[in-house]
Image (cartoon, rainbow, N blue to C red; front, side, top):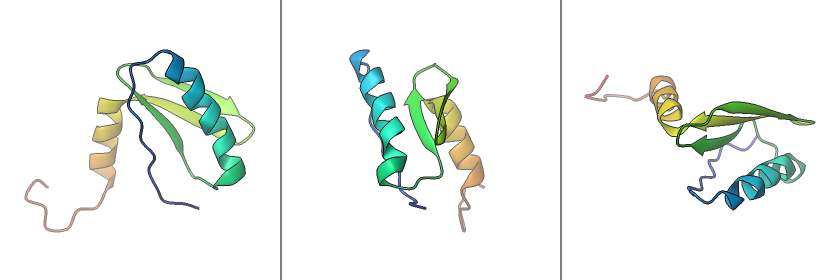
Length: 77
């Protein structure tokens, strides 16, 4: 599995179909554990033949990321 993050930020409504389409095609090219679209306030799960695409508000993803990434000698933990 590839442990990489691909991030694109856009307020363009046309970008939605393009980004979802790209994430539908991604597992054919690169094995991935998790496919995520970060949004301002939308949240949903999109199912396809490769599993799910998570649509998550950015603030929620940041909290989850912060709580699950081990940080050594952090003054904030």
